[in-house]
Image (cartoon, rainbow, N blue to C red; front, top):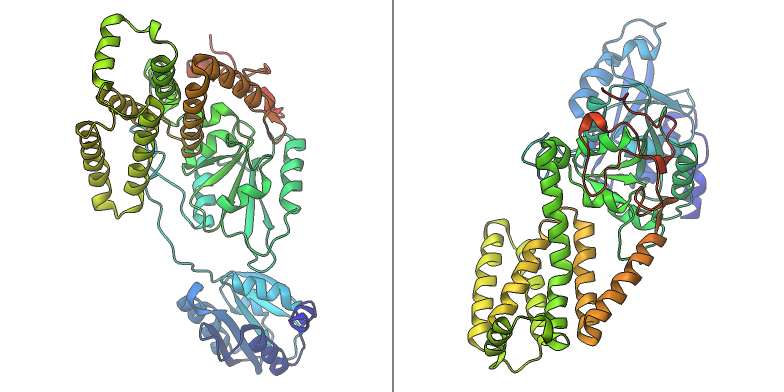
Length: 491
């Protein structure tokens, strides 16, 4: 293995047969049936030549029509190679490692006897999905395009929306064996140089054999891997990624990933939704209000029920207290056990509905919840009020669109349940205060997690509620963009 690694660093031989034998050794030919090595003679030049490519990831027709046939049919002896073949010549290489990397990317390498270099032509044709609708970030009003697993398609979607020479795509190879390529995307005239340097430093410091997609890369570059709160935003919507780029953020793209990572990310990045700005001012803020109410309900309602029934019964009106006592009279478990049983059952139903085949997934979710809740009440395991509370808590959690924030809230809900079981409202209040201290202490690539609310920065004040679009004059001040004013004030 060490001999192969050392051989990759060497320059190729001018003897065609020796060079091809070495490439056969690299690719384990003839054992490896996916590698095509085709020998022929170039007409006019009267030289032997060989093309090497990987059949499954290249356009075979393009290779035949634009590379091999023009070389075979050539009759002029003084013509340059790039003038014979109409295919796009990417580069010429002399090092084995460089040639191997381009072949592995789906390009075709041409070797000519007597020349100690390889001509690499573009012929990539990876199989993958076309541009489809977003599955997770669904909106009623707005673009219906989503990223797919082909990074070239994703770059094209961003270029279509930002037609500027300042949109930069830098590429980095981030793994040793798999040679995965990562693209850093930013607006040259907006991005903060210190932020960009910080991101590049984290990416270049990665030393692993393989990182197949952005979901795996995220753990290598985020500041706190064990934090319950996410600090890197993931989006499958090109329009959303575009809006962040135009504010001075940085995006990461990668093959095999149908999304983009947005750096840095604050709490409000996860709380907001693409549709908030597509709807009219009042409608968009109404949706945000509903989302915030849903966040509070799913986080606290189960814990409040436990606190009230165990420690603070004096807060319940007498008639309601009597009704609750009557419904719980036949239940043998304390309220904490009731809540945990139903909460865990709901999480299991939700997870089971996601993993089973699509046609029966929704059916299992609806029927399972109905049957389980009804059976639990009739068996006197839980009270009817607990079923209502857990159902409302679960339903409100679906209003939180970002999957990462959704998981954070779902986990935090269980922590609040235990705090309420031990200390009632005092435990909930203490935990909420500690949680606020913890959130304020978080940073995402040097940006405070609750910015621009705390600490306060110049911005368009797009936090709980958004302003009318024409009044959103500033880019986020916490990013320190080169141009903080994005539009002039409209009178």
